[in-house]
Picture (spheres, rainbow, N blue to C red):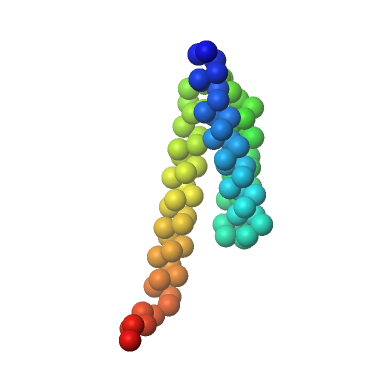
Length: 87
């Protein structure tokens, strides 16, 4: 039971990373470099199950990087477009 509970979350994280990378590649919402890095990290996460406890930090670090990208791109589009008053 300990093996299942320690490997399943990392596998699920890898699968969710692959699915989001595929969506972002098709929709072109993230830069291609970040999408390729997502694929590489996801495959690394899927293949290195149980090798180190540090591997479990890949998914939270990836979520942090993607969140920062979304925040910066959202702030950048807001500063470019002028505020239009609502009538």
